[in-house]
Image (tube, rainbow, N blue to C red):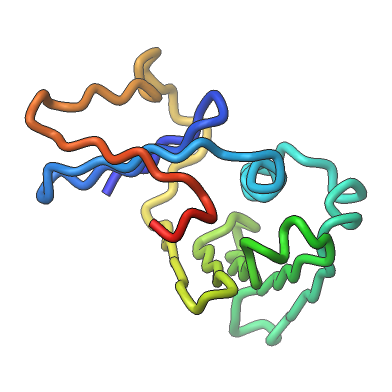
Length: 141
């Protein structure tokens, strides 16, 4: 699966299913995405989330648990858990749960830092036979 977040839109593309989902990302969701990409100042996010930091000791990775405190975010998000590699201090797993019980988890591996990237890296060209579904958050789709 490919996930592209750009210009206020999230697109998930599943090549094997020939399906893409396009979701316009609202203001509350942008705060979460901005935090996960380290673009949102921590002091600003403290107005939207409570934070719990866990350190299991030298043999494990750090865990950061975020729980929304702002009503507009609580409606869409129950929690976000971020596992941080103890040595590189990079996120290696992000899991989030929604109030309806749905959950999503992303794991990151083979991370390369400061590798030069091509100019078109964030362009997503979908084949003509891909079915694109427009989703609206909170619509039950």
